[in-house]
Length: 126
Image 1 (cartoon, one colour):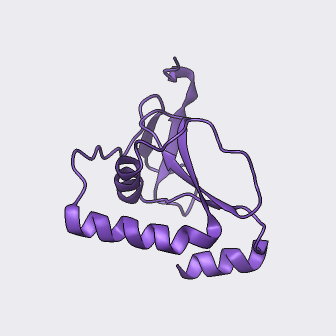
Image 2 (cartoon, one colour):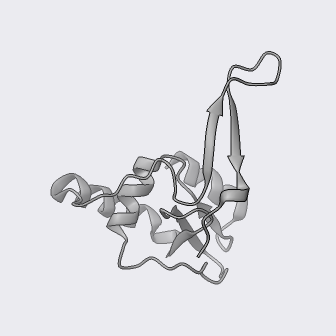
Image 3 (cartoon, one colour):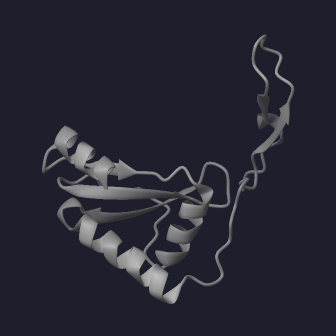
C-alpha cells in the first residue's frame, strides 16, 4: 500500500490511479476473485477512481474493474482477507497469453545473456 500512498500524492484526491500487477500469479488470483465485475472496456476516467487492469489469456486483451480510490484500502483488505480465509478455486494461471508467440534465445547484443523475440506475423486474432 506504500505505492498507493505515493500515487495518491502524485494525482491528488480527484486524480485517477491505474493499477496493473506485473505478477501473473497475482493477476490470476485477482482475475478469478473479481470475475463477475470485470469488463473488457476501460471504465470512463472519472475523478477519484482507481482502475485495476488485469491480463486475460488472450494477447492484447485486458480486463478492467474500478473502485473509488478513497475506499481502495478497505476493499483490498477485504479481498485479501477473503482470499486467506476462503481461498479462490479454479484459478487459471497464464504465464504466456494465447496469440502472442515468442521465443527466448542467446542474445545477439554483446554483453547481454538473453534475447526475447516476438513473432507478430503469427498472431492469432479473432
